[in-house]
Image 1 (cartoon, rainbow, N blue to C red):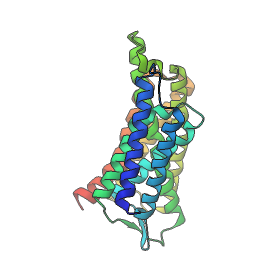
Image 2 (cartoon, helix red, strand yellow):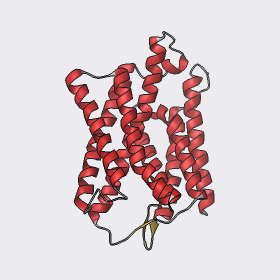
Image 3 (cartoon, rainbow, N blue to C red):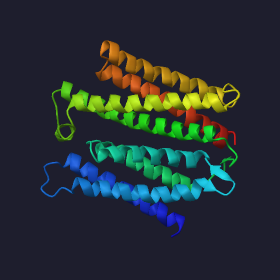
Length: 268
């Protein structure tokens, strides 16, 4: 099967799943709601097609193609996988309303704008581990940021005493907040390991083309670490936790994809 057709199928499956999740949230009282398992099955089908595409795009005879849009598609795949696996046991699939359409968009961009940026097959295993850990950390913290936005919306409506159907369909506020800090904790550990592995394989993490990525990643690490420490020592929660989460996520996006965009697309 040709790659454009696989890409189209994956996009349609992701969007269909997001649509069904949205219907379940906003039309909760409807007598014929699509079953939750069906929405998840569509998303897993899209993930399977997405996996095949990434294998074709990234694994080339001359090395790993981690150009900008390939890396973006890989990051969205990791985000979706990190969302769908826990959704088998926890009610977190609602985040797919945002994350699945974004993943569909990255597949379309990767299909339209292929670029070449190879990692040599001779690259050290520490470098490959660094890339893997970085992707996993960014993905989990991306999900945490979407969870923080959803938590902010939920908190706003509850404070205004306007808990509409959408808000009532979400888990309790304390449960949402507990899931947020679980994601941040795991993402922080992965980010720590990614930074350590980066120090291990790079001779100078402050070279001209790496200094912005290094500094921004380190600042993001400090932000998430401070948030977890504040939660443990002073019980930080609510709006303060949301602001710190989104600030750390913005720094990570600038660190990785901002630098790749400038180096590969703008400066070529």
